[in-house]
Length: 226
Ligand code: CA
Image (cartoon, rainbow, N blue to C red; front, side, top):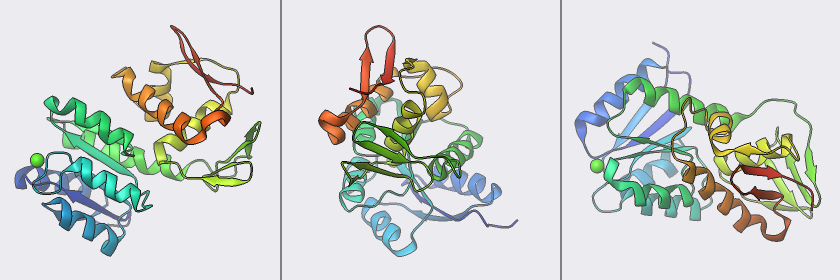
């Protein structure tokens, strides 16, 4: 089986889960490297430069939340999928705020894991040759995956970028949280609307007064010129 899709780093302390993840990602054509604690995981990101990271939230030593914080604080935007237990909801929200791109709740099917990794990677690549989008002082270049505000670059995570790009492609059009989850995250069924809210507030925090995202009460969000 060719492993030509690049290397995925799994950071997971439960060996049987790591083995299952490795099996399915390998079957899907990814190379896989496994680390069982957060510190070794961070070192492996720097050493191996994986195309994506599958991160368990509950890790000994350096936990998944702190892993995420250190990775993103260090300017590393590798697509990251968090794996969480059901009772870790609060941590999951924090993880998303810190720049995780998506999450899976245990127990999940290994097939679902492979599909999520593919989606995170596809979204990171974006459609080729799309024109630059502009709203007021904000410009977004889908093919370069760059955002500029008054000509200055703005650092966004993969998912922040995808959400902003989606809204900017349809200026003035209002989308419900369920629609945004379907289009931006690729979820077939509506899951947790707060995930969308978390990313909107992250974008507003980074773009401040220049954020084009408008809340339409009781409906959802749109991107509008001021
Ligand atoms: Ca664990």
